[in-house]
Length: 121
Image (cartoon, rainbow, N blue to C red; front, side, top):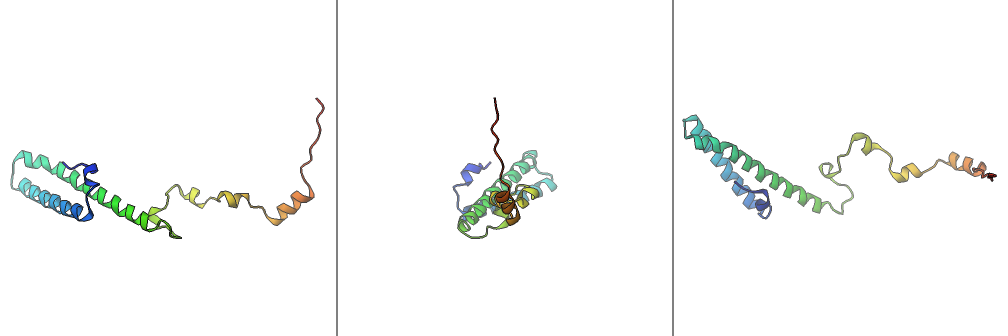
């Protein structure tokens, strides 16, 4: 069984090579299952499938990490690298936009400022 932390140190070529090996082994195990192979081979199918998933996960993480580094200082970030959040949160006004006031609001506030009253205790 391959471990994800062991795979992270591997290069792209090593990952692709190990992926091919695992897929080949899986196809051999499927053939063994059909031809009535040993129970140990049939039981191994699950672990090989999990290994393939681990390899693909690490490979995709490395790809995404490379994209992040490539688009670090770019004006636009690819959509799959943007923060997901929720649709409403993505469309909400930013803090700067919320703080802005219309010219009518500014005139009204200048003409009628909030009055401060002295309260007798």
